[in-house]
Amino acid sequence: MHYAIIAAGEGSRLVSEGVSLPKPLVELDGRPMIGRLIDIFASCGAESLSVIVNEQMREVREYLEARKAELPFPMHLVVKSTPSSMHSFYEVSRVFPAGSKFILTTVDTIFREDDFRRYAKAFEADSEADGYMAVTDFIDDEKPLYIDTDPETMLITAFRDAPTGADRYISGGIYGLTTPAISVLERCMEEGVSRMRNYQRALVSAGLKLRAWPFPKIVDVDHAADIRTAREFINS
Image (cartoon, rainbow, N blue to C red; front, side, top):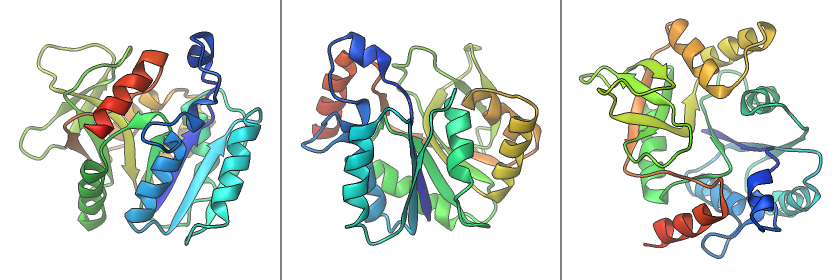
């Protein structure tokens, strides 16, 4: 399995709330959050890792360069400022090995390691699905993306900005995808589509089989208060 991390955001909300470190280097359990992700992917037997950071993240770049030398798998580091996470995804997708499965996550998506390992193992074993999208019924996001699923197959039928009353899950910000998803991404870029949620809608419109995989809880770190929440969550 191949992995990718989007860490190209500016973290402006954290800065405005007094957090001086770049978001990827904020410590959660004695490790920077990006280092924690790298360790989890390594423990899952990663074949490669691709990471994108913006051009202003000198400290993050230096940290990753230091980690790169000690990893048992190749790390591809992309340094580029992008207008959205979908554009960041496109930049890292260009270094993915052809024909491979990969799991992509944003750097501030916080989950328990055991939950992630079960998810990655299930995705790797599934020969039919085009993708495994992490979902959760824990809603603590400012602008959640609601998900409709077939209750029997857990295949995703729609992504919605607003709840319908029947939705149980929201997107967890962890995307397990295959080669057909890259073709959809390239088409979205050509058509000027923006935002990951619109890309996910395009995957459904294209007829890809996306299976929802529930996580008990996933925390996003957007504000200073979220750091404390994330620390308590993963250390509990």
